[in-house]
Image (cartoon, rainbow, N blue to C red; front, top):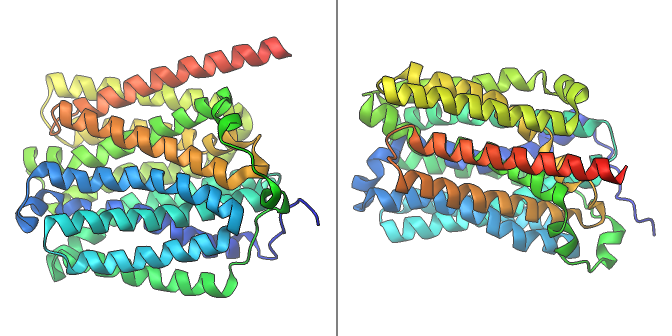
Length: 399
């Protein structure tokens, strides 16, 4: 039996139509919920800290679930992990729509995240199986980033409109309904791509954890995604509570950062080809630092507004796209025979750093100011730049 993964007979657009919904829905479950976050303490009869937990717990479990499902996908295959996780996501989404108690709401968000993590790791392991050594790999990661950029652009707007017209429960009913068709599509057309070598492989996580390249690019991914996590954790409080925006005005302002990501993604392939993985990562981190600097100026000398909070985020959004276009390949290129486990570890570490570091920044600093975003982004960008310099220095010594 060949150790190479089977090649899909699907064209790239057809494959994206099959795979992308699971990644998009996992992100949509966070973003579509944002406009009602300030109202949820009153709805659930709880405090803001518990509502923040429903955001943070989702991110934590999105990572921890993957550390379980990655190795499982290497053992039993990508398809059963994806189908099982997607069905759990559907069930939890409908359960959230029926919940009115804080404790059950938190538990169902946990289960929703577990289902999302299983579907995500199976999706990205399949991408790794099929496209790792093909030129389409940069294209597919960039296209995924582009499609994901539509989620924070449209998700909060859709959430605000649904909540205003039909009530907050409609948000989670919609998530469940949107998930049904991708599950049915996958049941019919998603076939197994796990390499035969992965069936026989019993390698541990240790080689991955000892890789400086893995840590450098995973930390870069954590810096980028954590920046966006802290942004959407603080943006409702900054713009709705302090700047006086309505839910729809907030959603439209929030969407502009995603539009910047969409535009930047159109040129990502050209940037990566010119700068390479290391050059793209370093430029991404510089953009995060530059955006953090402008946020600091706005916080000290201005008041919460579109100009002082959203416009600096445009700069950071460009850095996020530069970064996420290369981090998966940079972190995972040496671990094709245990792609499921390596992808899971990559996303687990990123989710833990993002959720724990980002949540601490939001809670310990003033969550209705720009300081959590400034602090998280600046610290992570500096750490990544130091790690990248170390990696490049070591590579030069080896050559």
